[in-house]
Image 1 (cartoon, rainbow, N blue to C red):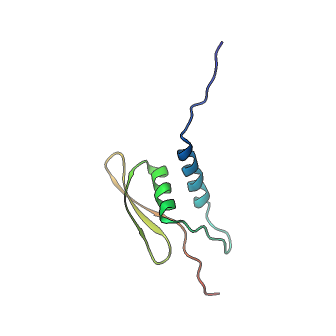
Image 2 (cartoon, one colour; image 1 turned 90 degrees about the vertical axis):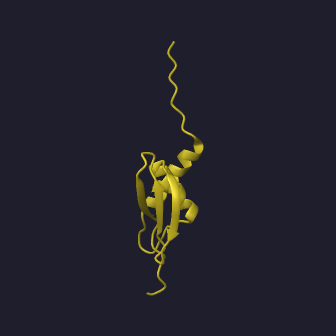
Length: 88
């Protein structure tokens, strides 16, 4: 009798992918998804599989992540959304 089994993914990878999807959905109106540095690292790792070399946050609230890809190439990613402005 043939028994079908589904390939299992590590739970941490599934959680990282879900986090990346949720943070990449964007914002509507005044709702902002503020990412932390650890969120930015998790998203970059989940999307690239590379080694994170550097993470910097700019004044607008975005994270610039420098990634060494598995093929040896360097990639820069912009992750996050701007901080809500206090001006109305």
